[in-house]
Amino acid sequence: MNKPMLTTHLSYRTVFSLVLKRDLTIAMRHKDDIINPLLFFVIVVTLFPLGIGPEAQILSRIAPGIIWVAALLATLLSLDRLFKSDHSDGSLEQMLLSPHPVFILVLAKIVAHWLITGLPLILIAPLLAVLLHLNEQSYGALMLTLLLGTPVLSLLGAIGVALTVGIKKGGVLLSLLVLPLYIPVLIFATSAIDTAALGLPYNGQLAIIAALFFGSLTLAPFAVGAALKVSTN
Amino acid sequence: MQFESFNAFLNMGGYGFYVWLSFGVSAALLLALIFSSISGHKQVIKNIAMHQQRTDKLRQARRKNKKSNAHTPTDTNTDTEVAQ
Amino acid sequence: MWKWLHPYANPEISYHFAGKILPWLTALTIVFLSIGILWALAFAPADYQQGDSFRIFYLHVPAASLSMGIYLGMAIAAFTSMVWQFKLADASAAAMAPVGAVFTAIALITGAAWGKPMWGTWWIWDARLTSELILLFLYLGVIALHSAFEDKNLAGKAAGILTLVGVINLPIIKYSVEWWNTLHQGSTVSKLGKPSMSIEMLWPFLFCFIGFALLVATIICIRFRSEILARNSVRPWVKTLVSTQLALAQHKSMEK
Image (cartoon, rainbow over the protein chains, first blue to last red):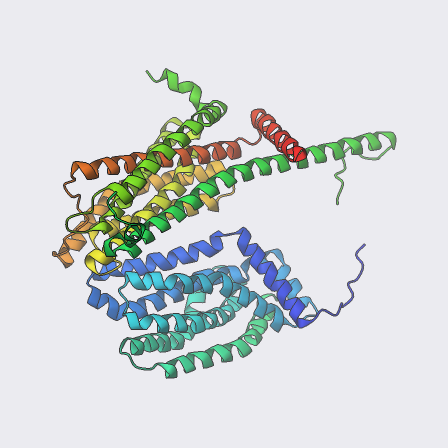
């Protein structure tokens, strides 16, 4: 017979780090989840020169857009694993029923997702920028926009996944829901990188992406929690 | 010897950075591959050994269960799995 | 005519055969590779046009040739496995894929490091480099497909199909990439063309090439043995082998 679990007073930090560690361990055991979206990112970026032509001038003009669109698509592909396996074995419901605030649990899962997906993207982006002959002055802007922007992608994407996790063929629906939300990040990020190529300061665009980051950091987990409660009904 | 001094060797006629980058990265990748192959082999052996030990333990536990069930009369004849 | 090969279809015999030739392969690899690399780095003459950066050539060309050769080897193994149901061929293909991927990466990286001083840019979308990049994707795809399956036999079959599709596609891809390249810019004179090698350059190149080929064989040997063990873990010969290895390891640690 199971003893009823007392609400042990776990601090928010403990709960956060427990869930974070759990998700990271699971990802380490399924390295495919990390490698496959990354490979997709690289291959998609490679497709553009093959489709457009190898002229360096044209490529360097569209390089920021290519890298950012590919990053969006790769993140989209990787979002599926955020809640799906937990939903199918019931641990998602258990998490929602636990006495700990859903905000913390959700935030921990999203941070784990960014560490697994966003961070490798950021690390490999400079190599892809070399392939696309990106303007030398733009590299800093590229890294900064990716650093600030990829967490936003994870946060906003989590809302979409939370809404579609219970639906059978939610994959394409997810893209329709999430890609419009990604458009502001895309616009300001590519604008920042283009401005940097001209040698001009791009603090304005970075500030807006930072605002998107902090806004989604504080608000998205609430939306995700609400969406999960709907999906697990 | 094509180079007069060790410094000239490192400099590679001005191309030192590229030559040593190539040789260095290639060496690093090959060493990593060799290391992963050897340690992978050891890991496979370890995994098989652990699996073997686990199945042996399960078999022993089942035998003990059979023996203890043989002494006490039970309704069913089925081998009860010890649920841990 | 092939009767002498038949015993080697038995995993146990192949495992022990591979174990026997492994020390020889290792020794030969060390000899050829150290002579070749030292010769290439310090004793071979610098190129008339490209100077000392030409020494990268001794890494780049063997790596590129081997990367394509290994893919061909994988395809032959996949074909053998499919036509003659030769299970061991699947194991050898799984052993070859990571080695091929690493050599493709080395070819790409040394090519880029060579291209920077020669063309002024780290990367150029010329036909050869682009085809090599696509080859890398094919390798990584095979590796990813392999690791996605729990059952190694199914994984081998799936990866085999992918490899065969890839090898048929490879000439088509190379042709289309060359066509794409000439369409867009005819002026890409690939300076990586095989130079007419003087005899002083030919010898270190041969030593490097043979050394790297031997290295490939050695690493594939090691991985092949691991694959055999992993795929035959329930067989009694594996169990006795593992327990003797374990006893040896425990004995060694007790002696310490």
